[in-house]
Image 1 (cartoon, rainbow, N blue to C red):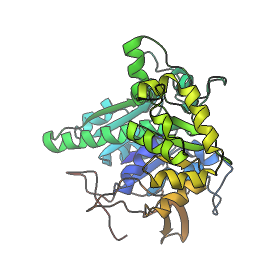
Image 2: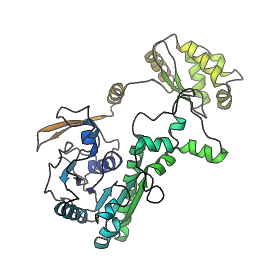
Image 3: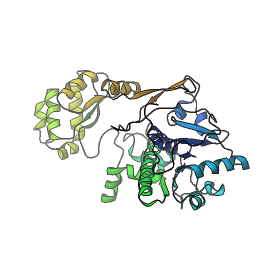
Image 4: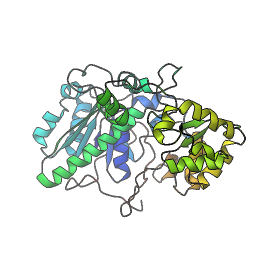
Length: 382
């Protein structure tokens, strides 16, 4: 795979594929991927943690597309690859002769993935930054409390979702290639990915014509399904059935709430969510979030303390999910702690072979994977 992408969505997609054996050459400008300079924080080797989070298992090759030599090298890499992925603004790759039409004329079996912010038509000129897309794409309008201003999600979630869509599109195109012998272009954009990811909120808008409102941590269709105050810290309670509600109020010591006409059935609980929240928090205020989490979970009620990221990683480890991998790069003696790939395959598991590369660390590198019939050449035991 020739990876001409930068920042998050594209690098996330190529890393996901690299984890399962794709040979990825990360083609960078002399200045490098933008996120190399997005510091602090940095890891023990001085590499920015933003860059490190999405660039393991790759090799870095510097190509200055403004120079004839750099452009020739980039073209060579692109024509050798099974897959090209890029996230320049529409028209930039065409200017350099690295666009799908030019490359596929020589390589009709090429799978070429373009990631943009707003597509290649009317939104071609718009910059694809996650914050901007969260704003104009409606996500911020439903994020935050009723009394707050619209808020962004605490991570560049639209980029991540778009990267996942890119992976799906690339793999679907490769399956088609196996069957037909012909490659194709894969187009994904941040705005469409967000609109698809709005699921029930978008569906509600289409069905009713009414814009969903910010509700903080509450759910528009389920109650109680939000964070509630305890004696020390917030507790997330996600009650999705009447049986779970009965168990909840029984554990809290107020079983009569299950037969209260205001709270009998989810629709009634949604209609009287304010009164219900007050009554539940009166009981929850007698114990800590950790205590309630233990008691409610034992009773089959989905509930949990609002954790920090460090606590979340520890929880996953306690549950046997092995959320963190330590990568030891034998060639460089560098190490890197990484969040593990979330996809677990029984026969061809993800492998972690290389730490995130230094800029230009692999200049002169060539692809090692065979071209056909598949991009994925699983590497095990390395």
